[in-house]
Image 1 (cartoon, rainbow, N blue to C red):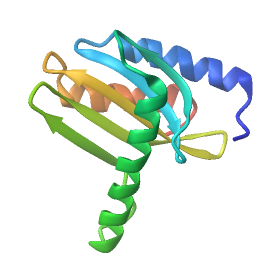
Image 2 (image 1 turned 30 degrees about the horizontal axis):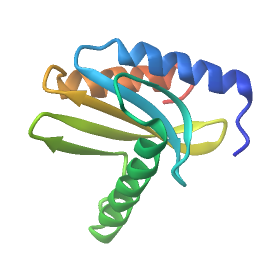
Image 3 (image 1 turned 180 degrees about the horizontal axis):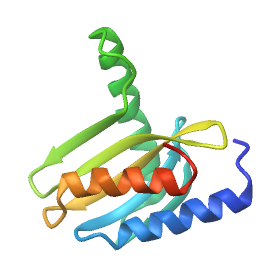
Length: 126
């Protein structure tokens, strides 16, 4: 992966900003092949494991959307008993990645989707 260090530092800062949202436990930007590019987490969350698992989930979203002829997959949400994981596509310096947000029941999905979009805009992406 060929992403300059300055952009990685900016991405890490954006992860920290998103982590400040109510209920957010972790934010990981990962490569499509499952490696942690930038992250901010609380507690015992392991960014490397999140990156690897989110990569697989995002890949499933791509295959399902293609099979159903619904166009390109933009995001995948995993709802759980105690929160959710929101995985959305993001591009860093021409490299496709995913923005992964892990949140508990204190977070509101719509707000996380909105703030994730704002992170993409601040990173110079839409």
